[in-house]
Length: 303
Image (cartoon, rainbow, N blue to C red; front, side, top):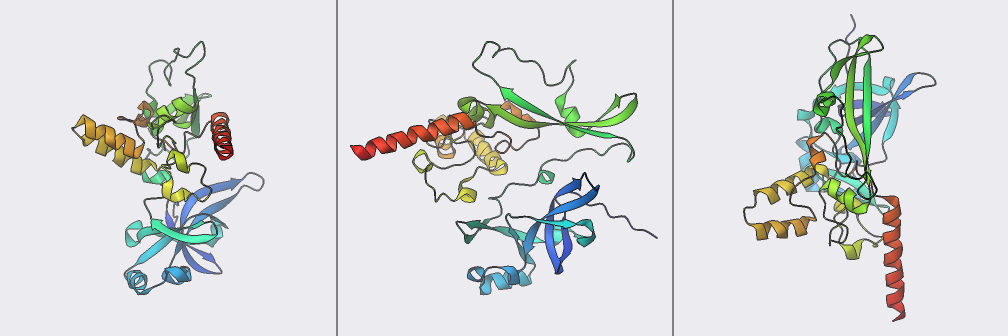
């Protein structure tokens, strides 16, 4: 008798690496040369695994009631044979995440970490396990300058609905039924328009970076605690809700300034995406901005 266990990205699992350990399955990789699967694991730490400066009576008592701690990168890559069993997520208590900042361990609330797509994306399963599955990702470049800047067509031709493809759609491909899933890939644009696509204020605002909440004066600070100042999709959602629920226009504007956000999210937020990770910085303008600030600082030193 064979018992088949299905593992998906985002699952918590026990695995063997010299000893039995707990981790989270972050990615399933296929080696095209030997067709062998590899699993990328995010470590989950027991109290005994914590760095010494984080050990204490309070955390030890919480560990006795089942609390464990997520560890940020680097992730571990293992084989499928090292997997022991799946762990029910409701049996775990995780509120903090450990990460390294300038070679020193730090700890912060688990909300200050990028969610795994399995936490905010759910799709339909194919109607049959044997049907071919095609996954498509649409990369968008938003052009707001050149001749055809106002000429845009729909994502899906012939009046189709992109949201249908996000959930999976049965189509005929090369004469046979196939399950087609489409999603938004990377959105690229010039610096101001990229911020618009994220719902973030323009780059001349005090908090005008679409990937972090650092102020303009702190952007060149090499000791910046990136995990603590990064923008996270789920936190931005809560901030947009707080802005939207505020009836007073003056208070709305203050919140927009405080969060570095526009009054309303981008139209692309109607699709399944992580707004900050999938709208990377425009390298040219980011570099030009840094050079401009460097010249200003250099000039100020000479005065």
